Length: 189
Image 1 (cartoon, rainbow, N blue to C red):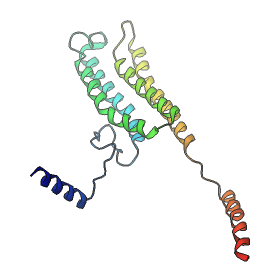
Image 2 (tube, rainbow, N blue to C red; image 1 turned 90 degrees about the vertical axis):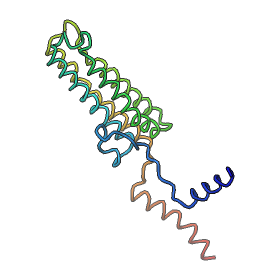
Image 3 (tube, one colour; image 1 turned 120 degrees about the vertical axis):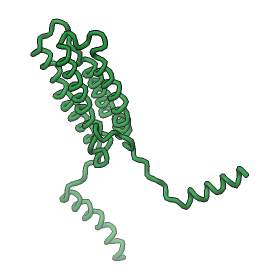
Image 4 (cartoon, one colour; image 1 turned 60 degrees about the vertical axis):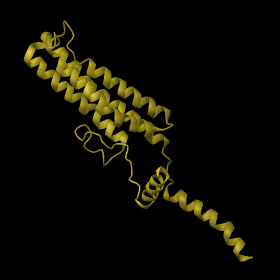
């Protein structure tokens, strides 16, 4: 009986087309709205500043409710902690997809890891530091956005450097012309 069920399953799977599995299936569209238009790397680059901004906004609400010093006292920082944990889970899929796309490109993979580490450090450091003025706090938590862009640019450069360069039209024409000469002489004999 089990053999028949396995044979039936095999027959059905051979007839039905295989569904393509996309690396970014089940990615929350709020962290990566262009997931289905771009690569995993593009999604990760989009998700990093977006998820940071979401937790930044949650922290801002806590600060408005409890003040700079009070935003972390007791359970007052629970909303931000929840945001951080949620977004660590949400960003995992785009991050893993980006690492797979980087493949054996070591500089790109290291850049992606560095960007992820910077993101983790930045969301954790959304907390106000004792003695920090409101202006100092605002400047400090705005800095990661520029660092995110810079690191994403460095990864893009690393990925582009491993892409096979396409020969220019004149170089390709010269190569084709050279390749055609030996074949032409053989056909004349």
